[in-house]
Length: 445
Image 1 (tube, helix red, strand yellow):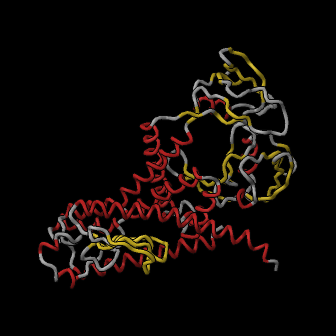
Image 2 (cartoon, rainbow, N blue to C red; image 1 turned 30 degrees about the vertical axis):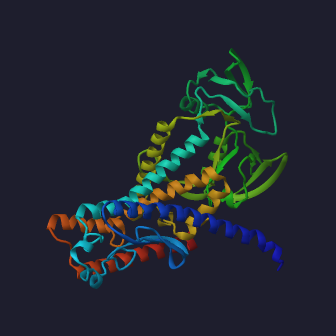
């Protein structure tokens, strides 16, 4: 075996691992910092703040008496408060009983109910805040398309002359007005496929009509991590010119062939930097959210299309970006809950649940597509982590909140014996879920 052939694979593994560790570390730090800072504000003392698990590699104790450390295993993290037996916030009964009343007030278990609840809620809440801020940051950085749509850079395409020019403002397409971005996409979606399209434009203050290329060619603008297209070596900027020898002119034609393929192998001709290359792939069955809050199963290759030009963008402003961030976070949370419910009821495949290997692969793929995609992925994952931690499973934050709700109603917490049993059950459920998700990573297509 030629060892040189292993170097790209080894580099890819390192890249994937590094991206996964960075993404997870950011999310874990923000989650645990939420617990830590709200706990401190509530009078609860944190003994250890750890990023990673296992033995500490580096550590430092601050002036508040908290030891901050980076541990050897970069998977997860925890805050251990005074009186805790572990990072899962279970009570160290003997040590707790030995504390005086004043010191107990500074433990998680001896603090008032409001302080304990606020400290537990803060972890997931900080994850959601992180998601909102990261989504907003990406939107501010990349901007949103101007309205009416304004032509920016023209894509390099193999045929036809470019009649549109940078700076042109598109007022209508084939006679249909396009006053804003949403209307523009509605109009081009319904366009009949043709070699030439009429554009009414504003060019330097003059209104004129020019004939130009079909606006939505089978051009690759985005790739879904772990998809058939990415596995086949397709790259952003590629243009699909033919499928099984049949020419395609529009991205919609490509979508129709893929969705009706039934998973059979497809031979794609790809134009890339002046050369035509061939590749073969097969669409995969994917469950995707629909407009009604449910899911539909479709054959997809994991490719998104783009216009024949890049629209000119502008900053939406801070408050609009934050609104977009909130909307995106809510959408992901609702889609995740809907997906989980549909998996439980058997409406969609349980293979949609991915474990650490699948998340790591997606991390590396997102990072390879640029900083914006990687930051967006971290925001998505942060929402998922915050949501997962609110599930009413003992060991997770949501399980502790259920115990606190019981205490608020009953006037006393569950007994220490009951807590130990429930925590063990919760840990078993969590480990079972992790093993199941890992199995999906290994055996699901």
